[in-house]
Length: 53
Image (cartoon, rainbow, N blue to C red; front, side, top):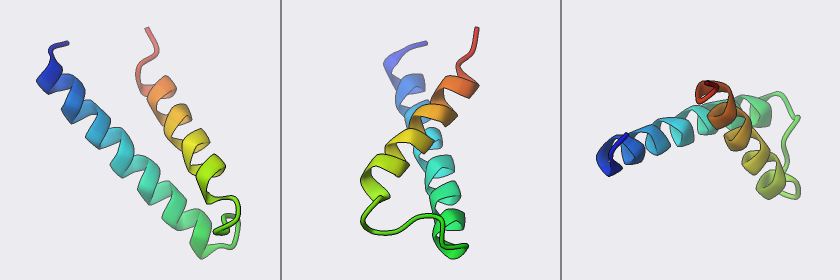
């Protein structure tokens, strides 16, 4: 995977994580106090799931 593909992949991971975070906010499962750690966990989970060998 070259740098361009990696950048595109990272952007896709961020977009997917954002959509999940928005849904969590809508249902009250994510608050401003927990946003930083929760978003990082969502992003990492999405990335690990997609990049499984």
